[in-house]
Amino acid sequence: MPPSQFIVKSVAAKKAGYKGFRVRSFVSAMEGARAGNVHFKEVMIYDAHSRLLRSRAYDEGGRLLYSAERRLSDPHSRQASVKTGQLLFFGDAEILSASMKDGGVPVRVEAELAPMKDEQERRDAETGTVERWNGTVCWVAGPQLERKPREPGQLWVEKDSFLPVRAVLSTDDGMIDVRFEGYRFHREFPFPRHISLAMPAVDKVEKTAEGFSKNIVARAETSEVVVNPAMSEFRQPFSPGFTDAGNSADSAVRDLIRVYYKFLR
Image (cartoon, rainbow, N blue to C red; front, side):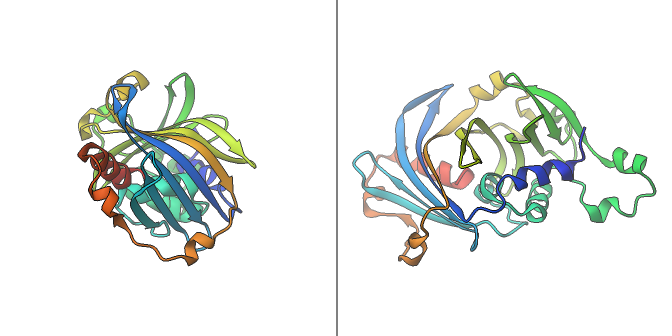
């Protein structure tokens, strides 16, 4: 089992060196493991220099419904959507380690490991397991959840690629359980085709993919990823929140938008 800090550094390294990203997604409310009839389109852009993320939600006719802005540079943000954004886009290993640690993942950083007397003590300080998730063998930074640990978080990464496939994090918005699947590479930048949110009780986080699928409330399907896009977006005026069209949209669509931007974006 590799050290937890090595796992987080490997995740961050895959995002380092890029100027930014633009992602288009189709977001759906879920009915069990299937997408329901409530949905919207999203266009998101992230500037790695300013560490600023902007996202807009549109209806099928192209009307703007909602806009949101997040700054991903705070390692101690307890906002669920910031932690998810950091996992997807952030290339700073130190800040990502602090963020995951703040979310309950027992990442042991250098300041904790250095005073320990030997390598055996440092290994004993780590908490991790090897698990299988949806047919994939994973390194899991964090304890087995059924043991109700003091630090409830987990970060699951593919054993060979170190791509995150699941994050169980404690936030001010409650416990989040997020799944990343179907990675594709865009100019060597890996990004999941599907991002799913499950809403379990804190002491009932599902250990299996089958159990997870029963609790999914929202899923984003990626339709386009552009690496290092033009950043003219950030020179334009920006008004966060619902537009008039958003306020007049169906209540189920507004609820989906609130959930998505609270927990995932």
